[in-house]
Length: 152
View (cartoon, one colour):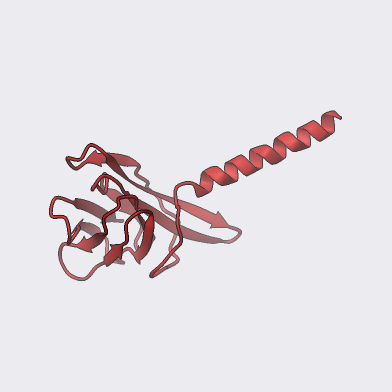
């Protein structure tokens, strides 16, 4: 009977680890996607934009067999994007909007990226620029919302 308990414990641990790995993404992809090398840096932080509620940004990587896919996530909450995000060139960035209002993630200069994200859990994706550098962005609807994407 100990073997049965051990198997159940191992199965439960595998399910919990798998669920924890999926928790950061959330939602479904809606726009452009790309495959890139694994992320070498990650950031998870929050920043208050005057409303009292934080937004978060994170990046990470997931490998399946011989192929690797680089992903990063921005979660908008309380009219805030969160701390600066560092991603590899060409990474897929998924934006999830937890506010009820619609937002955008629009590069301040050029046409590096520009996505609209519906409120109440809406998602959108964009591909990070291929040129390394720091890209400031904003919400076209809410002038106090600003963020930074750094491409390595």
